[in-house]
Image 1 (spheres, protein in one colour):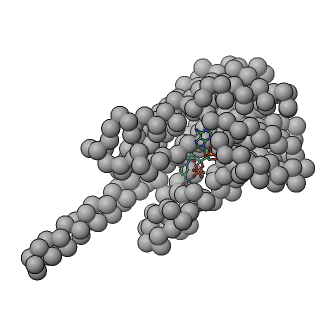
Image 2 (cartoon, rainbow, N blue to C red):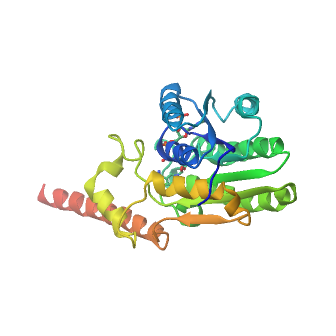
Image 3 (spheres, helix red, strand yellow):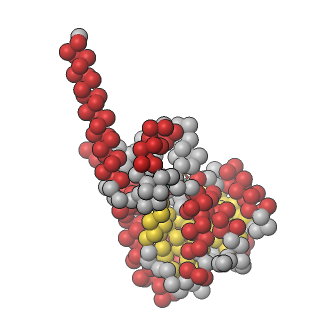
Length: 281
Ligand SMILES: NC(=O)c1ccc[n+]([C@@H]2O[C@H](COP(=O)([O-])OP(=O)(O)OC[C@H]3O[C@@H](n4cnc5c(N)ncnc54)[C@H](OP(=O)(O)O)[C@@H]3O)[C@@H](O)[C@H]2O)c1
């Protein structure tokens, strides 16, 4: 069984969702964990859970779109734990107000999504790598969207595809420094945010439709992602480098098409019912 005893790890966006699951799994495997994010309360709660496991936790309130905040994560980690063995680039999202049909996208809606998920993820990885003077491991959380068509969330998928491409380049450029770089590309994982009360993921029809695309007939969990990250951070994964590991329960095949098909069917049904109403009136 692998162990992260004696190692320290940084998780961006570690206060909730997948980042929380990853932080807890790294700690469960033995690591001390730096949890970074913008909102203090969830970070403090995760730190408490890690401490209760007998590991150490450091909270760094930071916005990864600010270079000075990235620098604070690195310096805080090194001052507290001496070294960063593993850095997980988990912080990312797509604000529903920014994504939509490609025909309607504007530069103003493009930039926040691509900047957060691609540009700042890269600069976090660069900051981590610069600190890893004796080697280390970087894990980029991408998405099934990085290798699929993404109707209605096009620039999000493009940003994740960009991270997957950079993962390979980082692995090539930094391999001789003993730095391994891999990506984990999850399918749909309901979280407090993605499955929260404001999310369309709470609609039973949407959940049913998503499950239908998964050969294993269930959606993913934060534990599915956390366990893989903990393994990737371990010495037993020492030969895994430059990979994009799809973690989708087998759902990555043709899901983009299925999602779009639903969208088209919905639009056709709306047009049909509008036509019927006009005729009736
Ligand atoms: N859930 C899924 O189905 C799914 C599927 C595929 C890929 N993913 C990827 O997995 C990662 C986590 O997703 P999630 O579903 O757990 O999302 P989430 O619940 O929305 O959590 C996003 C995390 O990122 C942090 N974050 C966002 N912007 C930040 C910023 N500027 N600086 C620092 N932290 C920031 C958030 O904390 P604060 O808001 O407090 O800063 C939060 O902890 C993302 O990269 C996402 O693209 C998720």
